[in-house]
Length: 138
Image (cartoon, rainbow, N blue to C red; front, side, top):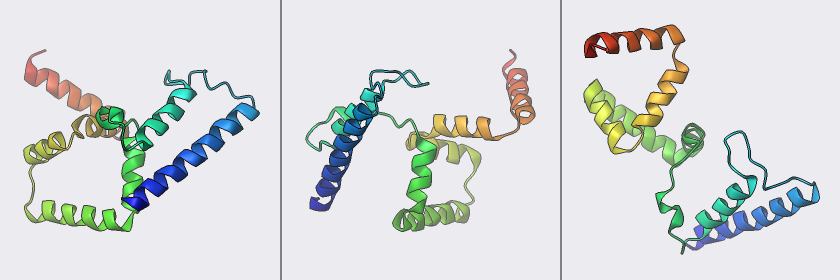
């Protein structure tokens, strides 16, 4: 725990430096980005998330899940765990419904839907949508 607290304090220290640098460079932290979020909000959120005594961030959702997953895969400990999970899923020959259930249980079903829609060719996505409309009768 001491190591985590030290790293969080280092993040806060850099955050203070970042805020100072933004002000020195004349960056308006009250300006919205292309997602409609103020730069200052990101800074405030980092401070809140680093405060282990503050529970506000416990209910927050991730906005960069793909980048976080990539980061986690680079971590050798997580990489071996993820590879073991993949091997287990292959060993049991997991089916589509079970995989969907797993994604729902870990809260990644919507993110996976988005990633698949964005990564597949438009034609293939449209074919699936047309099939869904046929099956549902709409």
